[in-house]
Length: 123
Image (cartoon, rainbow, N blue to C red; front, side, top):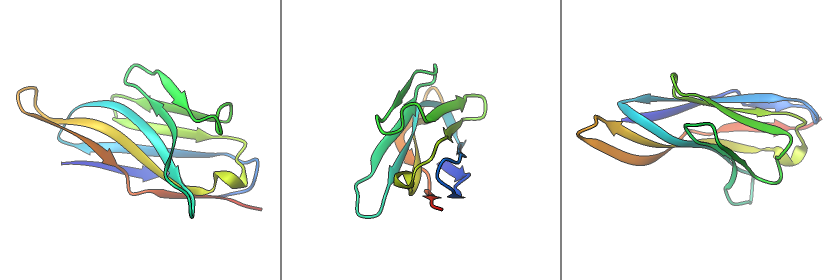
């Protein structure tokens, strides 16, 4: 039983900033890669950024230099700092995490998704 709860979405003007948070909770043994995806109306869900437990990151070309992903392993939380936002960044943002739940002797691995949070960039 693992849940990912997102927060931080909202309406922001072009050029503004927003910080998304996603906290994993439940019977967690370990959390592998965590990341953020987004889906705009009429478009497929796309990868925004990922981060490993050691801090290695990967970004979509469209957000490089503007977005930063980070995590707090002690809190099982991942963040997405979004700067210099553009109207084309408007989408529902989903948190994702590959989680090993249970114990060291009985674990279940699964890909979990947050509920999604709306980010709207408009003047």
